[in-house]
Image 1 (cartoon, rainbow, N blue to C red):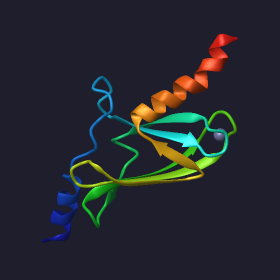
Image 2: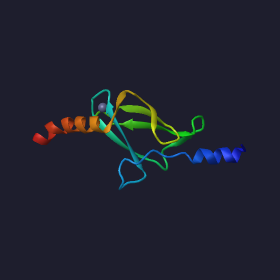
Image 3: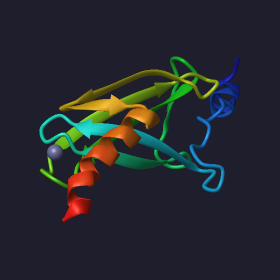
Image 4: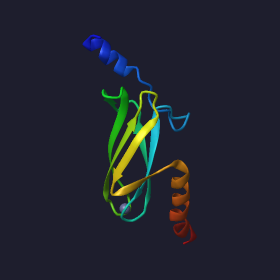
Length: 116
Ligand SMILES: [Zn+2]
């Protein structure tokens, strides 16, 4: 396979599926700050924020995340296979959440403030 053919096949891997059909280029990463517990949703632009992983023909994401409460920096890494499925995700100084966990933590986090 030529160099250019390899490049081209790398570019044909499927991107992760958008989180919301009305925003087709966005994928959301949900995390919780390991210090203050704040839930954070990060919008990832599928066109600009992902890099090609030439070893797996998939994609990977490296993202610095700062929560808006204690301003701690977290470092997330997510790997996707060539079909756009998440194969591994790690984060330093925090925790990666799925959507349901994020919604539950966010509701609990917002509740006391709404009562004031
Ligand atoms: Zn925090």
